[in-house]
Length: 347
Image (cartoon, rainbow, N blue to C red; front, side):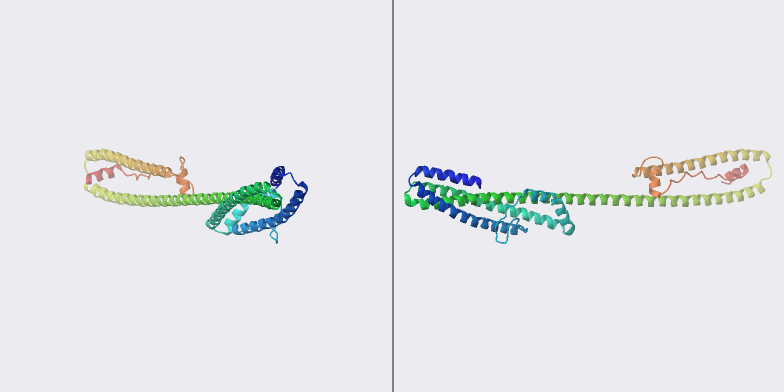
């Protein structure tokens, strides 16, 4: 406003230089013009207050500093602006907690669009004020070049010039307010985008944990099934050995009754029995070695599946306890060399 008053005084000085006559009468005309300008300025302030109230109603928020009579109260904006910046995060989090995040984001985008429309409208008002300012300046120059009767028109032109400058300043102020609202709304939108990204990251982590847990359960189940199959195979092997031992005993008994002579033949059979026993021991050792190799490969597969390396840690993680100790090789049933020899003769 101070800059506007200085411009008006400068232009008034130029007009006085063009018309030096009747200075006293012209001063009286200016006094009347100033009183009229003051009255119109009050009306313009009320109109600006009502315009601010309309803009706040369009944005869905109460107008700041507007009284019941529509006059804008001049208040410092620094502290309120700082509090608004500090409370943006809390306000956004409160809106997210009570409402849907998509709905809040849509509302903020609508506010940004409204701010853009207000900026465009105030820009148009500013352009109109500029045109009126040029027109008022032209009229003021024409009025200054006229005669004494044009002094009243000069006062009106000065008043119009002041009104156009006030309108331009108000348009600039509205543009600044709309820009500030747009920046604040953009900050809210950025906070919402950060919250949305955090929720998406949380969902991905929960899904990864669920997949890992399902894989662990499947591996534990596979291990239990392998143990059950191994147990069944061991029982079958034990039953087969018992059955084979019974058959060997029957065959040896029958053969002993049939062959009671021939010491040399028995000696040869004894040697053959020892050889067969050694062959059987070797065969059982190979079977035990193959079983241990399968056990080792199974443990390696469990470690490769993602449950750690070394020390049976993956197996402990699957079973919820310590890894099973290596089984001792099944005891070999001791049999007499004569039984082995005679069994070979039966075959």
